[in-house]
Image 1 (spheres, rainbow, N blue to C red):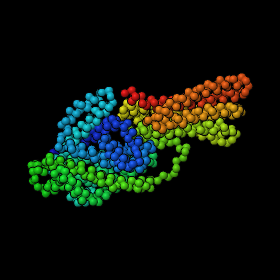
Image 2: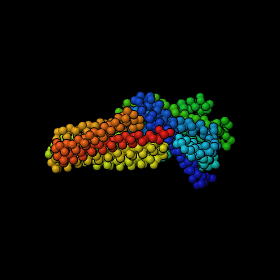
Image 3: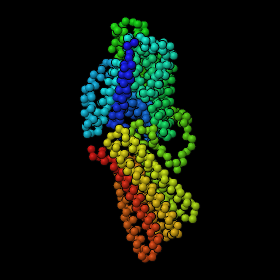
Image 4: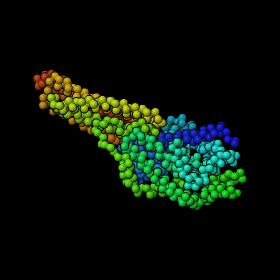
Length: 596
């Protein structure tokens, strides 16, 4: 046997180069279209047809159904789309991923793209040094594209030559003549290969090489690809592990869709493969099943078998076409059948993964972000934005509790309960700031565009200011506690002025939450209103401060009451400052894009 350990290691290196090329190409496209992808998915309608089209387009763009389904899991986790919407996108993603198989098929044998790889690298590498981020990202895409096909070419070079190594042919033959058993063995092999590589495109490339080299028949190649359709679900499942229940249900929906479709196709495998063979014959002029039959029979057809016993370029092209046609027809048929049962899918998934109990209001664990959702850094920004909005809502509850304390009798048990809740909320607020900030720092370590890095900078500022709002709310509670300890009571006119001030602050908080809710596209009117409210709070604070000095001098109330009164007014004014700082943080996210 002439196949050495060096050849085997070279083969592993070629596979690694192929996978790395897929990764770089996918990441480059995600960076080029990152913001647009967020926008497209973020405004997804409830129309399942639109969802399917979106899934097809997104997956075709980034050349990876695993990446697109991870995005969908992330968006469901962030609450940006419902489970039903997500299922439609996933259905489309399964069709969109066939674009990759067609690219590999088209360039594998008819055109040697690796011959032009150096030329493409000469274009792509200089683009990495350009100032504009879009050019850099497109350069990464070109480099990944080159590596992908260079790897594919090297795989073809280093796979064992079966004519020179009959021992390996004999080994493979032991598992190719078992009828239905062979189909099941190679079906399972496809599942395992795709789970290990986490890429159905990699499995397709390996299958293409195996079929073109004569290791296995066209039918068994289709069995591997069918198994890969199940194996590709592992990536979104892993991504959903630390997500919320909706994210886990989305991943389960993806698994159900692929498993049920694959098992049904497996039940009618031979007729289905014959259909694909006929379609390939009509489009390409050759039936790949006839090529496999000619190989098995040892026929010396010069159009199919070359003098050395291998397949001709024309035969290899036909097999490549057929292998690309198989997942296309399978996923298209699966989509056309399953799309009508979207609601049923949702009900089944919810039945399999029921909600055990309703989450309590005071469960402050992060709901929209987690460690397992960092596989697509460009798109994790939306996760953080949703979490920040929830953070703002929780701090808004602290403001409401602080206002309640102002009017709560210190002798009442309710005062102690509300004070304890505020203290608990403040502690959790500190932890949430750290957790969200740590998440954003991890995201920033990924491959991000300058615009996305600017957004992360703005969000870090926002969470710091929201935490300051929480601190200020608890400071109000501590001021009231000290007031009660000294048996100081506010007169009715003072309480009315405090209420008037906190009415302004509450309005500012509501306005701030409106801006956080639409952080991607903040309403200009709300931003202007935020500045007006902040000026109104400042002016009212100045007015009350002057009146306080006058009232103390005229014995309207004593000095000690005036001190606590102005402490509360001062904290209210600080709340206004922190809220306008949050608005500034939202504006900060768009400075880069505005400057370009």
